[in-house]
Length: 332
Image 1 (cartoon, rainbow, N blue to C red):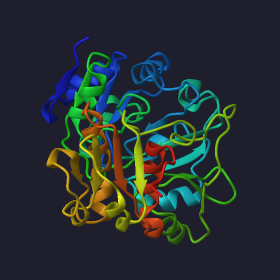
Image 2 (cartoon, helix red, strand yellow):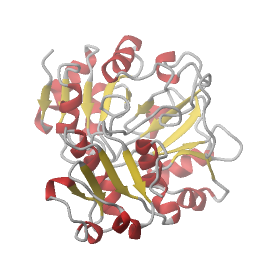
Image 3 (cartoon, rainbow, N blue to C red):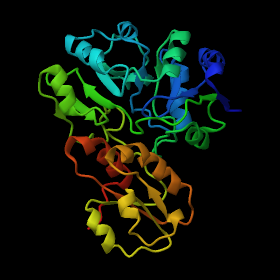
Image 4 (spheres, rainbow, N blue to C red):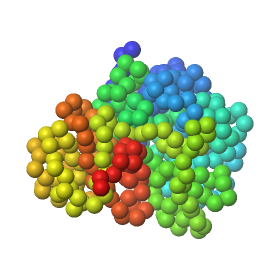
């Protein structure tokens, strides 16, 4: 299969492919998603096959506006409307009860809930409006690998496996959306993202919890990113929690390091063994997946040391992704 790259003026061609049941990757402000019509069970199953994704890992349903949710959600409660008004379009995914038989089990994992998201990207809005259906939107990468933040990343992983990729440039945020579960009495963040639990709590006027539990092998996770290994390059990743500890590492030519510029300038390694996370945590959020992919493409790197952050809720999303990539392995 040829994988075509579409520009903004070729959006109609991408719509035609999706309408035929093909898979097309699309840009968002967070990472690139892999699109298929959410009501087309065969196409949705194709998403799992293309990614090599476990079949019990539910998918996010990507919509163009709140009105589209009403066709599929059992109800849109008042607190969901508050969040939608304040954060949509944007990097927030909302878990609600789904209408019986409104979406295939391949989307919901057989659960009575489903996650909805309205991305902040004009191309994706236009795509869904032209299509007239919501689309599923897991990250457009090979399962377990770092999520894609450019069309080139998608092409690298899924060339020949999907029909097309809409090139919307590099993503702005770089980490996947916050997922909040509103199907429970007390709202709970199932996956941290750019929007923090504190910000959600302020808008809702009530407590918002943070999920800290693990999903067992026999359980179906309520949302993506809760159960399986994610974001990992081929070489082992080690989290360096204290920036001063970089000076304690005896760096060798088969090691890579990802850190802020202020740290990298003190490390005696060739430039090709270093990847800049930027100047601050916001930059690091944006650059994390790009760095993991950079080293994943290098056959001569056997270990990657990555700077960790402890900046409260602001660093929750970054550390969530980094800990998954490292399998919990920290330098000590």
